[in-house]
Length: 490
Image 1 (spheres, rainbow, N blue to C red):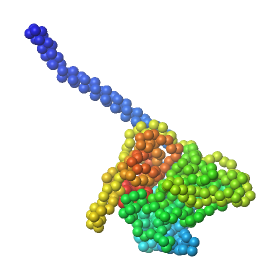
Image 2 (cartoon, rainbow, N blue to C red):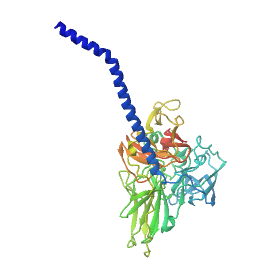
Image 3 (spheres, rainbow, N blue to C red):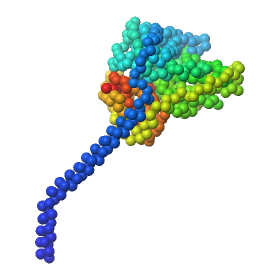
Image 4 (cartoon, rainbow, N blue to C red):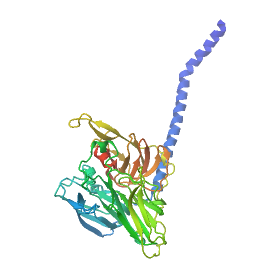
């Protein structure tokens, strides 16, 4: 036994001498393998991102050559009165004394020159929602311009790069100023618009009214801030309680819908009328799909293509909202008269919208966690107030993130709260690529996406417009309470 043990000890002693060498050799092999696979993975990711950029090429232009035509108009924000209810005058703030404000129409390539004057008792600006403008024209105080004081003027001038349905509103005390009536539409026309029998805009809004038909003047209440923002008790389309579109049998209509509400989400549809969505947030889709399958969040726009049946004389088609528990009537189309020939042409689509198949496998560049926290301090009372946060910070405290110009970038909105958050990114369009980690394939771009409670939404973008752009919740009360940050494209 002694000799046997001695021999075993001698063998083990020899092995011990070589253990450091063995360990080093194994470490080298493992490290080499890690480096090999890591390098390979990095190359694959690089190739994928480059492939996604290549697939994006041509989806929309980086810049546009102005055609030399300048559309110039004067616009004034002021206090006034409008008749929303028959026989009643409601005090509002408005652009050029109308609610909604003027429907500004330009053709693609035109330059818009808007001579703006502020006759309000507050500072204000104009933000052109969804329009890719020069950074200095984006209308965000403290980020792109100084606020326009009462009695002062400012000239907004730019050439829209994209045809489509857009709108404008203040970006100062937005939750109050929009609710008082400050919003309007900007339509950038292309050659397709002239083919339709009618090209109509419906701006959907809700108002919180008092019994005497006036705007309820307590804004950003604790209840609104803690919940899904300010939802009204009166809904209008184009500032009317009973908006009616008169059409003839056979007409083909382009109907542009804009949600100008502070916080209300709609799920609009027509009863017994076939309609196709041709554009989302101003941009043509790659493939049309049925109207009624997409929610309309604050800030969102939907363009639909409707052909009125030849035998529809005397029929009425109601636009209804089905987002809530009860169906709500919003407006209607009334058909009357002799049938006309239906314009025949293919649906306008953008065949260059990228599929980005596999994009959800790319590592997320930036995550935005959406939540709320109790705000305490002087004047807050025992219960305190509430702040809505992005990555645990409330505006103006934020960390700007840099996206790489003309490269494939990804970001994730993670809603850690039990409230709705329609997230809007200025200056860029993006594409949803996953929800709760499950890949999705939306055939269109967006500038605003609704993130449901406890949900994550991944989006991808190739930024073509440089500058500092805000990224915020378009429930205006949430933004007012801090849910706003900024990204820089460079």
